[in-house]
Image (cartoon, rainbow, N blue to C red; front, side, top):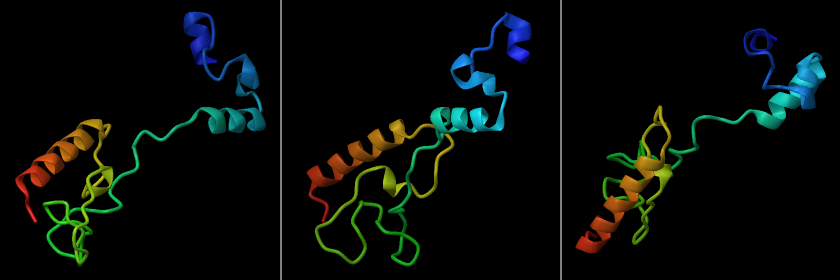
Length: 103
Protein backbone atom coordinates (compact mmCIF):
# COMPACT_ATOMS: atom_id res chain seq x y z
CA UNK A 1 0.00 0.00 0.00
CA UNK A 2 2.82 2.44 0.87
CA UNK A 3 4.50 1.99 -2.53
CA UNK A 4 1.23 2.64 -4.28
CA UNK A 5 0.91 6.01 -2.51
CA UNK A 6 4.44 7.06 -3.52
CA UNK A 7 4.80 5.83 -7.12
CA UNK A 8 1.19 5.18 -8.05
CA UNK A 9 1.38 1.39 -8.14
CA UNK A 10 2.44 -1.51 -6.01
CA UNK A 11 5.07 -3.76 -7.57
CA UNK A 12 5.02 -6.59 -5.04
CA UNK A 13 3.09 -8.58 -4.03
CA UNK A 14 0.94 -7.16 -6.84
CA UNK A 15 -2.32 -8.30 -8.43
CA UNK A 16 -1.23 -11.91 -8.99
CA UNK A 17 -1.23 -12.33 -5.21
CA UNK A 18 -4.25 -10.10 -4.59
CA UNK A 19 -1.90 -7.48 -3.14
CA UNK A 20 -1.57 -9.85 -0.16
CA UNK A 21 -4.77 -8.52 1.33
CA UNK A 22 -5.48 -11.83 3.04
CA UNK A 23 -3.25 -14.02 5.19
CA UNK A 24 -3.54 -16.84 2.64
CA UNK A 25 -2.44 -14.63 -0.29
CA UNK A 26 0.40 -13.16 1.76
CA UNK A 27 1.66 -16.63 2.71
CA UNK A 28 1.46 -17.76 -0.92
CA UNK A 29 3.46 -14.73 -2.04
CA UNK A 30 6.13 -15.38 0.61
CA UNK A 31 6.36 -19.09 -0.33
CA UNK A 32 6.66 -18.28 -4.04
CA UNK A 33 9.01 -15.31 -3.84
CA UNK A 34 11.16 -15.41 -0.69
CA UNK A 35 14.68 -16.75 -1.06
CA UNK A 36 17.50 -17.09 1.44
CA UNK A 37 20.24 -14.50 1.04
CA UNK A 38 23.03 -16.65 2.38
CA UNK A 39 24.23 -19.60 0.37
CA UNK A 40 24.66 -22.94 2.13
CA UNK A 41 28.26 -23.55 3.09
CA UNK A 42 30.45 -24.73 5.94
CA UNK A 43 29.35 -28.37 6.23
CA UNK A 44 32.99 -29.58 5.92
CA UNK A 45 34.58 -26.85 8.02
CA UNK A 46 38.32 -26.22 7.62
CA UNK A 47 40.41 -26.25 10.79
CA UNK A 48 43.52 -27.49 12.51
CA UNK A 49 42.20 -30.65 14.14
CA UNK A 50 39.70 -33.41 13.47
CA UNK A 51 37.98 -32.50 16.73
CA UNK A 52 36.71 -29.16 15.42
CA UNK A 53 36.81 -29.54 11.63
CA UNK A 54 36.53 -31.89 8.65
CA UNK A 55 39.44 -30.71 6.47
CA UNK A 56 42.88 -29.25 7.16
CA UNK A 57 44.55 -26.19 5.57
CA UNK A 58 45.48 -28.23 2.48
CA UNK A 59 41.84 -29.34 2.07
CA UNK A 60 42.59 -32.95 3.08
CA UNK A 61 39.82 -34.74 4.97
CA UNK A 62 41.07 -35.64 8.45
CA UNK A 63 41.62 -39.39 8.80
CA UNK A 64 40.99 -40.33 5.15
CA UNK A 65 43.92 -40.72 2.75
CA UNK A 66 43.81 -39.20 -0.74
CA UNK A 67 40.58 -37.26 -0.28
CA UNK A 68 40.22 -33.49 -0.47
CA UNK A 69 37.20 -31.20 -0.40
CA UNK A 70 37.45 -28.01 -2.45
CA UNK A 71 34.11 -26.21 -2.47
CA UNK A 72 31.95 -23.89 -0.38
CA UNK A 73 31.59 -26.49 2.34
CA UNK A 74 35.11 -25.82 3.68
CA UNK A 75 34.21 -22.32 4.88
CA UNK A 76 34.80 -22.21 8.63
CA UNK A 77 31.88 -19.81 9.06
CA UNK A 78 29.10 -18.45 6.86
CA UNK A 79 30.28 -15.22 5.22
CA UNK A 80 28.08 -12.14 5.35
CA UNK A 81 28.26 -11.72 1.57
CA UNK A 82 27.69 -13.91 -1.50
CA UNK A 83 30.14 -16.81 -1.55
CA UNK A 84 31.16 -16.85 -5.23
CA UNK A 85 34.50 -15.09 -4.64
CA UNK A 86 35.33 -17.36 -1.71
CA UNK A 87 34.54 -20.47 -3.76
CA UNK A 88 36.73 -19.24 -6.63
CA UNK A 89 39.58 -18.65 -4.18
CA UNK A 90 39.18 -22.13 -2.66
CA UNK A 91 39.27 -23.67 -6.15
CA UNK A 92 42.34 -21.63 -7.08
CA UNK A 93 44.17 -22.63 -3.90
CA UNK A 94 43.15 -26.28 -4.36
CA UNK A 95 44.62 -26.25 -7.86
CA UNK A 96 47.87 -24.74 -6.54
CA UNK A 97 48.07 -27.28 -3.68
CA UNK A 98 47.47 -30.23 -6.00
CA UNK A 99 49.86 -28.91 -8.68
CA UNK A 100 52.63 -28.58 -6.07
CA UNK A 101 52.09 -32.21 -5.14
CA UNK A 102 51.31 -31.46 -1.50
CA UNK A 103 50.46 -34.79 0.14
